[in-house]
Amino acid sequence: MSFSAGSPIGLGKSSMSREMSGSGAFEESGPFSPAAAGAASQGARPVKEESPDELLTAQLTEQLSEAFLGGMLSSKAAASSDSTSPPADLFPPASSTSGESPREKGEAWRLSSMLEHNHQFTQKRSYEPFLTGKLPDKKLVVVTCMDCRLTELLPAALGLKNGDAKIIKVAGAIVAHPFGSVMRSILVAVYGLGAEHIIVVGHHDCGMTGLDPAKILTQAKAHGIPAATFKTLASAGLNLDGWLSGFSSVQTSVQHSVDTIRNHPLLHCVKPDGGSHSRKTSEVAPAPAQQQEASKPPITVTGFVICPTTGRLDLVTEASPEIEDLLQRHKAAREATQTPAADAKQ
Image (cartoon, rainbow, N blue to C red; front, side, top):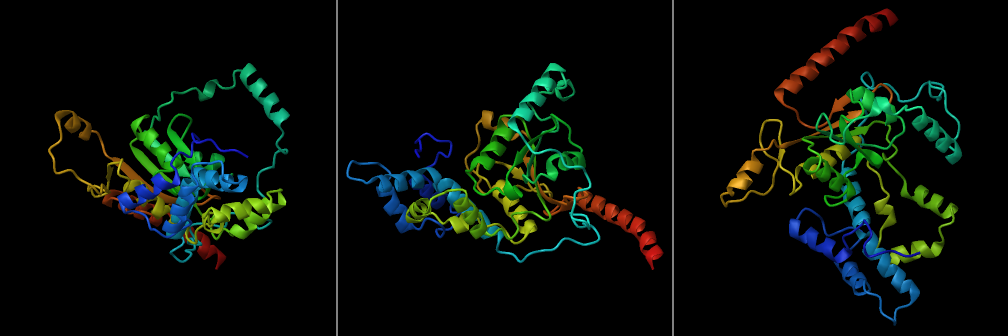
């Protein structure tokens, strides 16, 4: 096993500690205590006297610190609220009474089958209906979960077609770290691809709700990960249980991800009432070029929870008066259609 200093994970433990203390946005507790971080940093540069185990510990610490620390911060913040159940009348159970999906299941995945399908797909020019540009037509970024029930349901429920939006998928729709890969993708979408709107869409019945890290680690062991690896990671100060913990409330988790995006120092986000979410303002008058850049529209960030069965959205974050009025009208319409059915049952 080897790790390159130039891996995509990027930030090492020492630099991440400085980022934390500089922004003031993170807690010092977590998988890396100050003492553990200092001790591990001493081993970040391999020397001849170090044993192979010590070198592996140092490399793992340096390469994985950002990912582990980010997951700890997210799970700790998201799990701070009690579990919230979705309204039974608005969000029916995700599975049918028989426990089976109403659609017919396909055959098991095989590499050869996929390659054969791909060959036929390209030969028949089946790609033509999907042709589009690389810029999102709706200037939208969607951060959502990797749940397979949302693969086709979410775009259909949101009215999105190929080319409309940048869709970022991650377990639980969690933006775990302000300088992690998800946040980096958001920044690229905004500043490199012209996106102006960001929505975070979690979902009910999410596998990250109450995720038991012990079960995940047990499966890792069953797949052949040796006990020595877990011992090495623990000695490096990595808290696997904390990193693999989920959340107790999907609403709280979505709100936490929205707040992480809105408060990012590299984004100028606007509130529904027109105010700014930016935490830092400059007292120095901007140069003409900066004034021109500042005239560009600010970024909006909104959070939702979607039902993985019906596709219905539930707004989590605050909204403008116009949106609140729209949601009230939708609620009244649903109640009007539900009342006759309820009377018939009685």
